[in-house]
Length: 448
Image (cartoon, rainbow, N blue to C red):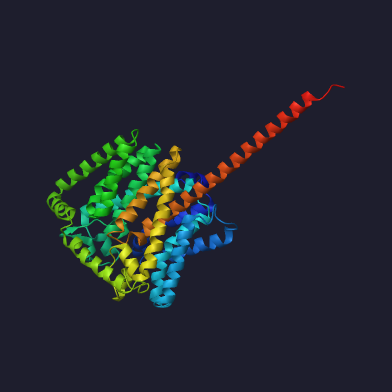
């Protein structure tokens, strides 16, 4: 019965370690809402990652395939630079250690995936899970938005601050509990839908995802996530002649349904006003962003080696530190880690992008499909980081780095298999040559 249940939720083909990671990926996005429902902080982060740490210590007995490669080295360089930042700036204060954990946890996600040898099967499951979570987030968010916006915030006893409205328009946030997080959860769902459509896998789920997401994503008022989803859909329509037009047509139909529902509720006027103002970056959020960027640049120039962890970003906002803004991620990181941090971040971005580019260029359809999903998430994080702290947003960060670990393992295992085949072919050719030479010599020997 257990095996049947695992098969139904797509876990039957996964290893024990992959199932453990799958459980974390399903639970963690719900952590705030689950805590609110039971009335107590469940500390799901400590529980989930503590269980993974124990399993890694118990099960890992060898290096990851191809370790260390260029991406491994760049991630290790980032961690080393982060440790050096602590030594040369604030020292190991509680705030600095907390900031260090926020900035380097992506390395934990990546190396856990690498050393647990997560496979393509896990990556496909993860993209499918992203679609399911996107559908659930859309359904819950739309229901709350239509029937009683703010009910989930009241349930979790969270205040309504400036993040939840733009130009007076309420923003959909669902169980992600912030509009931006919800927007990027929908971007993950679109990436999964693109990967599945490219491989013509579970097109019913793809259709459901598109119709659900395009009802909800515009209501988050998250410009970067919306732009990535729209551009990726358009690019796929031109790049994939087989499924691209179908994907675009379903997306357009889903968007039209969303617009019709907004019109029925009388929301078209405020949404159109936001689209007009926000689309030209003329709203107060965009205008203040330019001032914040300049302040960040001045701080980096004043101290190129950085001010230390916790001196910028979300923690700085909580504790009123040097740069209490959590906008453009490179600026936030530059204030904390200085120019060395920006250099190693660039290395990580380029190395991870190269992994997905290699899969996109693969001749194998199943690898290219995986490459499409991962590349869309990579673009969403990198492009979004120009305006938001996308590199430290937990759901995109967790999903992207586990997917990248699976892609890296897949590439190395494929290279190893190719080397084995080449060696076998060489040995076979050599054996045939020796046999032919022996036969030739035998034909030239005198008869007895």
